[in-house]
Length: 162
Image (tube, rainbow, N blue to C red):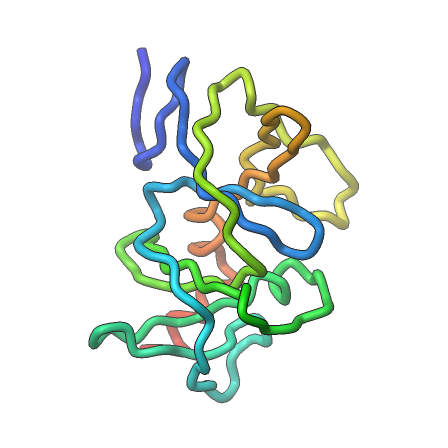
């Protein structure tokens, strides 16, 4: 029997992922968590927040914290250009944005196309990786965006925008 606890489909059913790039890698997040995609605009910085929290924007009257995923994942080479986008998410009843290098497309993956994340050294945090998706020659790092955005190190966001 298939059970839905957090809005994602499990069992033999497929799940749709919004794919995006950070550096040379391609990532995927559950499409159901995505509210909208917009170009990167200036943000209002907030003092004493972690480096990966770029600041906040006013999105139609809602103050939305913006997280730069390149900084969060320690990918370096942070440049903002016309391809840089913000994915607005609705996670755990909170609206937040994440800056990525670009959005690719939406892919439906079957359970057979999703492999478990490999066990890597303890230096690499794989708690937020749901698995690796394969489509033809492409490999996607599937991120559990709800777990990542509600993790203890991101809880600082609550204090930053409260």
